[in-house]
Image (cartoon, rainbow, N blue to C red):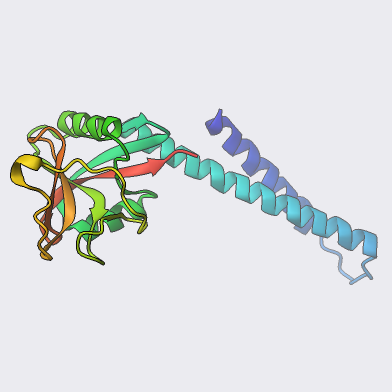
Length: 196
């Protein structure tokens, strides 16, 4: 449906452009208030059409991401297998229209763990969107919102609480438990995309 709608909107948009700007008059005529109103109306309709086209493009890109990753809880997740530092990983997710994944409950955490295990077999750890960079011990997501769900690895007494280890990774090897790590470490990561 979205694939069909995009060409229709483009044709309508270009038709309106053609009507508005073709056959210019050789002499300037006085524009009546009625004509000016009609031109403004056409311009606003064209602007709305372009907004709809851009929204359709965004939705199509999101569907492509969802097809490559998994879709759950009104979100799509996609593992990225090229290891990067925490900040580079988050910037890459943002550039693709998402953020580093932040599990909000145990069900999301387990789904991320299972997905990461399937999609990047042999990989042990993935960056997620949780850190205490600004204030030690105060964990926030990538949008600086407080995190209320944690899945720390208690057997290793995580988080260790050192200032050096401020970024959080999800360990597939430890059944989805979290640990804090030096942000400059290279790890694979999971991006999250909210479905509108």
